[in-house]
Length: 345
Ligand code: NDP
Ligand code: PYC
Image 1 (cartoon, rainbow, N blue to C red):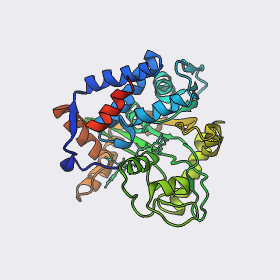
Image 2: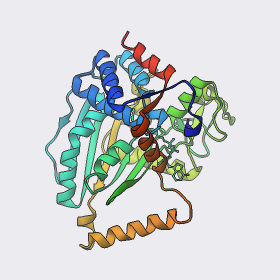
Image 3: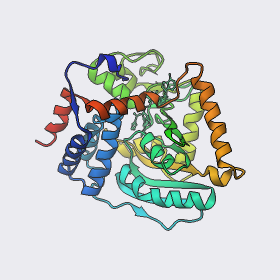
């Protein structure tokens, strides 16, 4: 659910980001994660909360707790970084959560991309709960463009069908901009992210029209009925094809589980999806004609053509939320904060 900043709930706490980081880290360690995992996970969820991404902020700590309780995730496994082969960097997460595996693979990905013009970071066997933009921004910070894809659990029916096959399968892209926040988009290929569906279920509010069908294949706005039936892809057959691409590129191509296989492994435990992730990076300085400044000017002309007519760039809402968080603290609903703190008890 997207929060209108002018209508922040009255019962909202405003907490300094470093205090929130310390708390999230303490909660994750209390749940049994190693310090390195806890820190990487805390950075991820606090970044989500800071940028007003409610479905992938502090709320995610609750689904991580449920996943840990299900007993499937490796709490202290060190990601195994294989020697880089050409442009390909592989990190085996060993059934642990994904953020630490990404952090461990990032330097080798940047190095391979600078050397080859493009690079691929393949993360294997990870429990994946996060938004993709933190990874994209970590790559654009090195002056590289990036594309990330990952499956999830089979919750989404293909266009024309009514049985779940695809995950909510996000696609994220980033383009570095000198002196400005990068151009980044990051969205589920489902009409609504599963995290947002869960937030609607918790709040007892209906889904927007067109997000899913019930078990009989009838359109429904009831989050529980849709969870028991099927979610739908955004944009009909187009989103459905993109979702299939994600299954192929971040599943079959890299020899990792598809969303159907992830759900089969879950076997009703209700844990976070477990699968692989494919992250591609591109070096404009190597792929272009040699005039990086001219390439950057082209990109800026494109962005200006968008914004000059009053349209906004993706991620601008997030960057505005980030600036607000820096000024007044990170907004956290009190009830959610208390639920998170209760995990320490
Ligand atoms: P949204 O629909 O909220 O946003 C999609 C993108 O479009 C964002 O980059 C957003 O920028 C941008 N955007 C929104 N409105 C406009 C507009 N009017 N003009 C221009 N750009 C706009 O994303 P989703 O709900 O689909 O996904 C939310 C998160 O869930 C993502 O971060 C995704 O990675 C995550 N997710 C993770 C999964 C996983 O398996 N790990 C699975 C599915 C989703 P802005 O944020 O600034 O509004
Ligand atoms: O919101 O769809 C989602 C999601 C799946 C896994 C992590 N987030």
